[in-house]
Amino acid sequence: METRLVKADGAAVEETAELLRSGGIAAVPTETVYGLAANAYDVEAVRSVFRAKGRPQDNPLILHICSTEMLYDIAESVRPLALTLAENFWPGPLTMIFPRKPHVPAETCGGLDTAAVRMPRSSFTLALIEKCGFPIAAPSANTSGLPSPTSAVHVYDDMNGKIPLIIDGGECRFGVESTVVCFENDDTVRILRPGAVTPEMLREYCHVVIDSGVLQKLDADAKVISPGMKYKHYSPAAEVYILKGSDEDVVGFIKSRNMNKIGFLGNGNEELPDNTVRFPYGVTPEEQAENLFASLRDADAAGCAEVYVRMPRTEGIGLAVYNRLLRSAGFRIIDAGVSDALQK
Ligand code: TXA
Ligand code: MG
Image 1 (cartoon, rainbow, N blue to C red):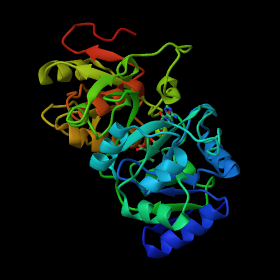
Image 2: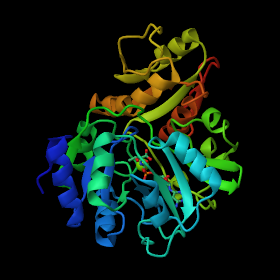
Image 3: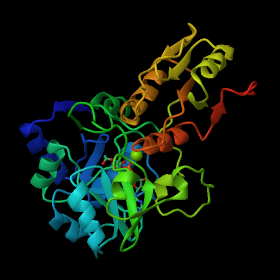
C-alpha cells in the first residue's frame, strides 16, 4: 500500500473525512502525539487500527469528540465533576472514562463496559471530527511498544506501507499522551496515566488519587483499570537506563562504560566522552516532555545500543515524563554515585 503524507489544511480535512467515512484509517496530528484515526462506531475500521499498530485486542482506544453532544452519545452517565473538568480542560490533553452506551462497539473499548473520551485541541482534528459527525477512535500512531510519534515523519517510519494517509500538522506541542482519569466518586478522580493536565491542575477542582501503576511496575497478571498500564511501552530498540546522581557522578559513570556508541539525554552541562552522542532533552519538565520520544527514536536511528537518560523532575508534566521513561527503561534506574553501579 502506498502511504501519502499530506499537509494539514482544509482540503486534507475533506479528504480524510471521506476516507474515514468509507471505513478507512489515517494518521492525524493532535496537541499530544499523532493518532491513528478510525470511525469509532465502525468495527471493521477499528480492527484495521489494531492490525496496523500490532496492538493487543484488549487495550481500548480513546474516542475523540468535538462537542459535548458527542459525549452524551457515548456516555451512559456524566457526573457534574466531569462537566466541570471538560469546561476547564477541553479541548485539551485530558481523557475521562465513562460507562459506555450499548451502541458503542465493545471492540473499540477493548471489551470493557467503559469508554475513554477526550476532545483534542488540534484545529485540524477538531474540524475533521466535526466534518465526520462521528467520534474518532485514535490510539497513538506508533507501532505498539515503540515510542509514540510526535512528528509526521515518526508516523511514516512506523506506518509506511500499512496505512494510506498521514496528515502532517507539524510537531506536537506537548510530546506526551493525554492524562487519563477515571472517577472514584463525585469529587475524586484517579489518574491512570499522567499527562499535560497535571495533578496540580486537577486539584483546583477535585481530589486526586494517583494510581499505584503510574510509577510502579505491575505484575503480568495484575488486575488493572487501564489495560495500557500493563504492556511494555515506549521502548526503542536500544537498552534505556535512567541515571540518577550529580553531573559529576553521571559523567564518571558514562566514562566507565566501554562501548562504541552511547546515547545520552541530559541537561547540557555534562562533559561527555567522545563515544557518547547527546540527544535533545532539556531541563524543564515541558522541554523533557517535548523531546523524550523523539530523542529515543533518534538514538535508535544513530545506532546507539544503550541510551542513558538523566532522572527527570516529577512535578507538573514531569510526572508524565517519568511515567513514560520508567517504561522505556523497563524500570531500570542506576545510581551513578554508587561505584559498581551497573554490573553485567
Ligand atoms: O494523547 C492521547 O491520548 C493520544 C492522542 C492520539 O489522542 N492517544 C493515545 O491513545 O495515547 P493510546 O491508545 O496510545 O492510549 C490510550 C490509553 C491506554 O493506556 C488505554 O489502556 C487507556 O487509554 N484506555 C482507553 N480506554 C480505556 C477505558 N475504557 N478504561 C481504561 N483505560 C482506557
Ligand atoms: Mg499509545
